[in-house]
Image (tube, rainbow, N blue to C red; front, side):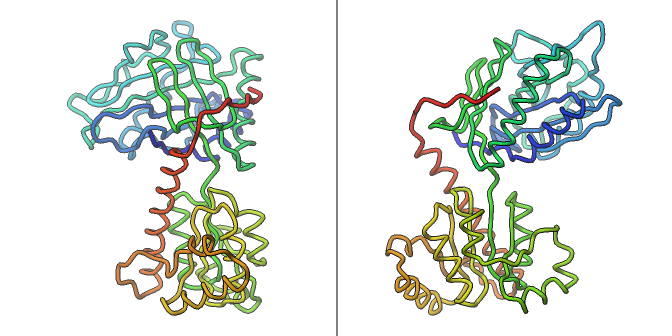
Length: 375
């Protein structure tokens, strides 16, 4: 079963807020029935400070139940009548009502306040099975284990390693292993395993109207997107532009493109697009990217320009198999003419490539003994 992988940003927030004393609710979609706003594997972190303030990251729906979850969990405070342990796990079903999972015998969370108004359903008409985890500070030794767990996840993902996180709701325990052939998502009555991977990355070569628009679209699509412009004049022109100045800090960098590919954009979660219209910089990036594990490599230009580019790359030592990986000209055929339309067409191609990469990585995994990490 293919599942979306939680982003490092979610666990970075959880790590930082737990260290600051917050209690954490981590919710994960484990099953869906009928139409659903988010697929299995989607997760939402809710962090509540000592004074009751809430911070969140991620999503388990299209926004239709997040507010209700937030309100419920904000009301669900520690009390003498129903205290929560330092770690608690529960599964619930949510659709036309919110009910405890029949196989979930722990019943840590009172869902009486959580049921939606009479007649309320998910807009898509579907039903979700949600795994709810609570991480508290009630026992020092267990809380230290939580901190190490969140730190290990964040460290591994930022180091571009993939992990498998396993939860046993029966024994009320979790564990972490290096990814060694696990499926993206494994679900049984009380046993849940989730594949966690680093963030998707995109490197755009050349600062121009297309890359400026495309980098924003890519960031909205969940990519860590960067524009590389090694040419002094073009870099100065971009940095002096109001439009480029409005982009998030660090989006535009001045660097040799092949160095940047090799240092940050060469793994199987990375993609590279050459948009510079300049063989001196485009070919540098393509030579490195096509020899790497990057899941997608593309270049902008006409059919004739693309044919000449392939001839150059062959003369520079790339093999036919490596050149075959190049998608050129880039972009879904939507008759695009303007920079904005070209950016949209390129983004559509990138989405398709990422989805193929997800499916391919799941299909290619083989069963192997996982390496245990410090919990």
